Image (tube, rainbow, N blue to C red; front, side, top):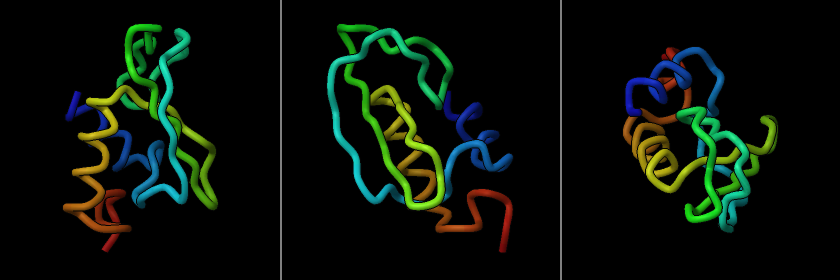
Length: 82
């Protein structure tokens, strides 16, 4: 999963900055923007909102991986800049 999320960050598919708002609920079968697998009704679905990026949804583990990569690299670096 980490490799998929790293590639999406580098390609600019996932944002390289923390969200301005996020909330959690149980999944409804929609795909995770991190791993592309469905987020089942037994799993937590994190919705993340950004200023200049579409709202995304992530499994709990994908949200942790993405958040750690963004925090470690900093804006611009995670997406291949700087």
